Length: 85
Image (cartoon, rainbow, N blue to C red):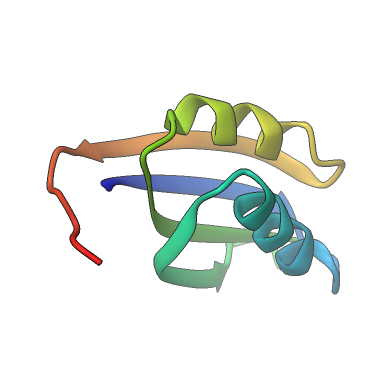
């Protein structure tokens, strides 16, 4: 599986993390690592996420961008590292 690093900026809502994780799961990606922190403005959160899948990360990025409270999704790094299950 290929690993991809995403940076997500979203408006803070109690349900936003659940929505993001649901999209990741439905699109066939596995969360390898995740870090969430409040931004300078407490109305926003920043999520750094490493996901793995055989699928294209662009498909996941596009779907995450469509979520109501997500402001920005950036693909930080595309690692060619193979993960064995």
